[in-house]
Amino acid sequence: MTKQYRDQRYLEKVGKRIVTLREGLGISQEKLSELSGLDTRQIGRIERAENNSSISMVKKIADALKVKVSELVDVDF
Image (cartoon, rainbow, N blue to C red; front, side):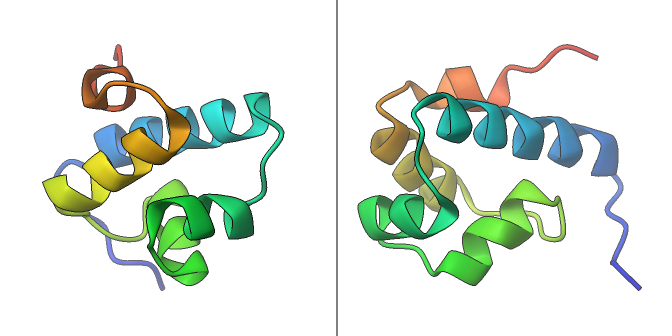
């Protein structure tokens, strides 16, 4: 069973945003892993909202996707 975080809905929206941006660039989780320096499994867990990532991880993903951190975390409810 996946752990549910207090802010689970927000984590899901951020994860979906990452997937949308990544797929828009036509890159795989493996390529995003390579570009960000994060493990492929970690990328998957973030996209599926299975963990509450640190700001530094989000920054690495944003840099790899060539977007501002705010473009990843500023999601509407």
